[in-house]
Each structure stands twice: as C-alpha cells, then as structure tokens.
Image 1: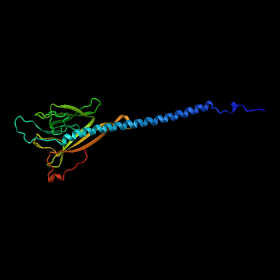
Image 2: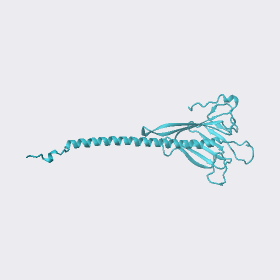
Image 3: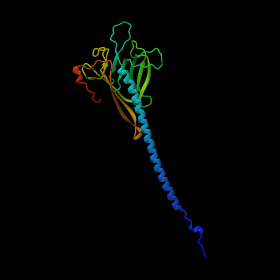
Image 4: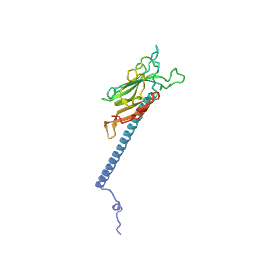
Length: 242
C-alpha cells in the first residue's frame, strides 16, 4: 500500500517569494522611516518655534516692565543731582533708547539697591548669524549724571532684523519716530506710549536651511506720562507698524 511522502506535503518558500517578501519589508521600512523622519523634523521645527517665541516674549516683557515704570525727575536745576532722561533715537530700522525707570528688581534680600535704574537698548552685529543683530540691554542700578554709561550689559534676543520704536505724544495724539526729553520739543516729558516693533530671523519650518522673518509688535503705556488731552484723544490710533 503506497503512502504519500511526508516531505512532499510541506509548503515552502521559493527564492522568488523570499525576494518579494524582503522587498515588501524594505518598502514598508522606508515608508516608516520617512514618516518618522517627517514627524521628528516637524517636532524639532515646533520646538524651535516655541523656543523662539519664548525668547521674544521674555525680551518684550523685560522691556515693557521698564518702560511702564519710566520716569523723569521734575527738579532739573539742582546742583550735583542725578539726571533722568528719556531719549529715543531713530536709526532707520535699528533704533536706540535710554531712559530712567523704577522697574529694577532686587535679586538678593536686604541688598542695598533701590527700584531706580538706568536702561539703554540698542543693537550690535550678531556673532552667531551673518546679517543679523543682537538686541542688548544695559541696566545700571544707580542713576547718575551719565544716563548712558556704566551698568551691566545683557543680550536680550539674537537674530534681530529690525528693532523699531515709535512714541505717542500726549499733547498731540500723534506718533513720532524720536523722543528727547532734554530737547526743546519734548522738554522733560514722557511719551504716553511706546510701540515696539521687533522682527527676527527664524528657521523656515519647511526648510531648515532657510530663514523667514517673524514680526512681533507691542504697545506699552507709560504709567507716569501725562494723559492724552481732550483734543489729542480723538487722534489716538494704533495703526499697524509700517
């Protein structure tokens, strides 16, 4: 009685089937790797954008705090007194500003510091990016007769393309590109508000080799400035920065 060969009933893979299976696995692995790479790139771009936004927000917050508490002394004729100013220079798209503020915060308990401080804001070439600038802030914990000297210099944000400031005149309700409390036009006066335009170079989320420009705008009211008069109040607008 003839029986079936047990070996003949076993199913096996031919060489062609093995090659096809390996090819399919390779395609699946390639697609999976491509999807994973895209997810990682998107995550990295999102993290970079969030870090960028945090840096800008921190810089804006520090500037805003000092501007809100900017002040000027009324006694400007006393001998051997300190000098408070509010001077903003229009340097095309890279402005400068120095002023006195009550926004200083003590870091150490019982330290011999007051809330008075001198602030200077300006830009210099960014050592980490060609064609960009770094926004710097100088803070002096003691106000003297040299409002733009001494103090500690700190970088606020890198990759700056534009740092532009405008000032709202409370007597006219109009915006001006410069302000000088030591001059004849705004003698010992503060602007009602300051508009800050900060444009930064940021990584292009579509191509990490490229950069895009991201604008940030904030308008800060000054606590110790005079209010807009009745005539100027109707002229007060916050049109978008040009």
